[in-house]
Structures are given as C-alpha cells and as structure tokens.
Image 1 (cartoon, rainbow, N blue to C red):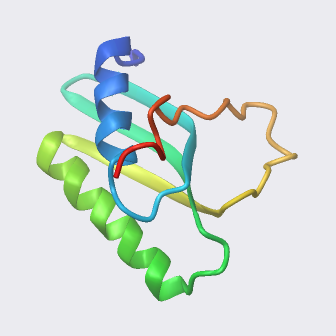
Image 2: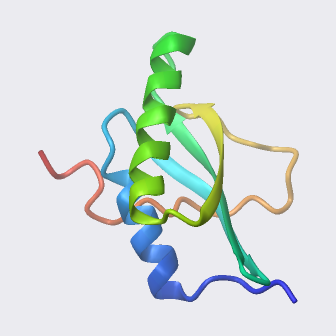
Length: 105
C-alpha cells in the first residue's frame, strides 16, 4: 500500500532541493512509498526571465543534489516560472519552501 513519507524525511528532502541555486520556490510537494520504492514530485519555481536552457541547468543541479542525498528516490520535477499560479488544480498544496529560504548566502 502507498504511504506518504514521514514528516522528517519530507523536510530533509525539501531542504536539500531548496538549497540549490536558481530556485525561487517549491510547492505541490507529494511523496509516496510503495513496496521498496520511494517517489517524490514537486513544482519548482525559477525566475520567469531565464531561458529554457538556463532553467534546465537549474533542474539538473537539483536532480543531482537530490540523487546524491536520496539515491533510491525517483524524482519528478515540474518547472514553473516564478509567480505562476495553478488555478485549475484543486489538489494544489501551499508553498513548502523552508522558512529560511532566500535568507542564506
């Protein structure tokens, strides 16, 4: 049966992702554990004025960091320009970016 990850594991995962350069926010974070497999998916905001190539580099950096910290987790990232609001999805979750996000150098 599928289960959501424990809160501590969710927080650790988001902290690793949010520390990567180029991210403006993370929302719609969902996780599940099914059998021996772990899955995580989220929407990641990047500046709206960067190119697709630049955004791709940001995503690749986040994927590398997450794979290093959570090597057995299958990760799906949906890229959003900063400020984008999903209005057609009733399952949208609030921003899960850590409270310190954007305050560190």
